[in-house]
Image (cartoon, rainbow, N blue to C red; front, side):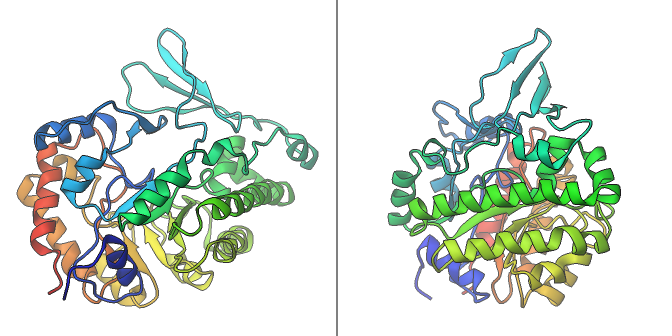
Length: 385
């Protein structure tokens, strides 16, 4: 088989056919990246310069991965990150911590010496009403500033033959409600005040669809995916019951996926990210249009690689799941990393439908040698022919 372009390779894979080799992703989204200190260590181990480090996500301390490193690693996907509030916020120095307030009026704070920002204050904490939701100063999802500079970047990536994924306006409708309301309070709302809970979710659906329209008008000819996301599960189980997911969240996810398909021209694939133990609702996701599942958290309950491939590999593709980031990548030996990656390739790759990436972002405690071990064994095994 002749060598494909990066985009041809990705699209062939997502049509569940075997390309020339398995595609590889690192750094294209806020859930397939590498944190700042791990990135610096990796660049040093590779003998490469990072240049001036710019964060694409202050909350998770994720930098843009510079193009020279992406080329050496032979990464097939490039990401477009809108100019949202978490990208370059104005930080407040509180003495023992830094904080900022994002465009959703959520306050984030990070103690000095820590690695990440956490939510410190929610704008809808306490009482809530439909009127309060209507009257809230929501950001403009179609603002020119949000997408400024992305069109030229998208065109360049497209002409260079890369597959392109666009970051979303914000986290998922369910997840954003947990952020602006507080997780405990919003889960209570879903149980005892469902009308208001649904009203709040509907607002985020509305804003996201407005964003899709604006983004498609500027970037649609270049983009093959939008990273839609909603973390609806933990390590052991869903955060809501399957019944509640189907009654209150599923239809709203479907509205988002349908809107993406309407807004963006083919070839376009619905990409959905949810961490955790989501096996029980994967059939629901397929039903409403999910074509690409990420991050494929195989350490979560019920998320067995062979079963996922056997039962759902004919209906969806797996983007991630290439190596365990909870235990093996940070704590294992290079030999254990290579063994884990080999197992994942042998399970997920046959027949296509697999883009290798880590299970979520590479964290600060991951040794550079283990990232290089992952890449080394991947390059040994990635060819289909």
